[in-house]
Image 1 (cartoon, rainbow, N blue to C red):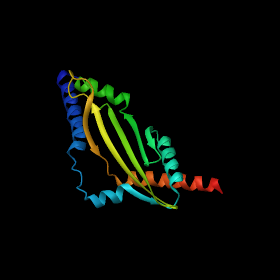
Image 2 (image 1 turned 120 degrees about the vertical axis):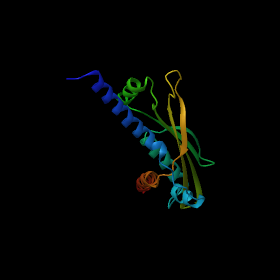
Image 3 (image 1 turned 45 degrees about the vertical axis):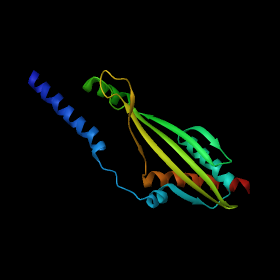
Image 4 (image 1 turned 90 degrees about the horizontal axis):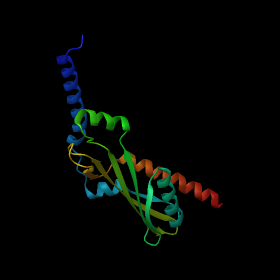
Length: 175
């Protein structure tokens, strides 16, 4: 038989587990990287001409769902962003548990510098900035909660590998 005390215990346990999962991400310390380590993660050299690499980068970002905000082929700058909203089910759960939605999602802003090194050598340097947004209380509106630079080696490698594939596809089409 379900009693008020049993129901309170279940909600309390659920609340504690939820706080642990939400808090765990915030409590995990980021490893301290040197400027050279950051450059190694965020930079890749491509054996192709500047225009091919520039256009391939834009194509890959669009394929990933990024909205291209600005491009300047003369300077090599590409600025894009993507919004990854937390699922409706998760937002509903947060609203029921806390009375507000603490985690509505994340926005990623990406800036990319494409640099011509020679006729057949081009360098790309990416910057990815993550901003979490949600409410801090039931009385507040939605706002930015936490912002940080992303230095996930696997993420950058995957993005650079996709750009490399698109560069090779474009070069094959030229022949």
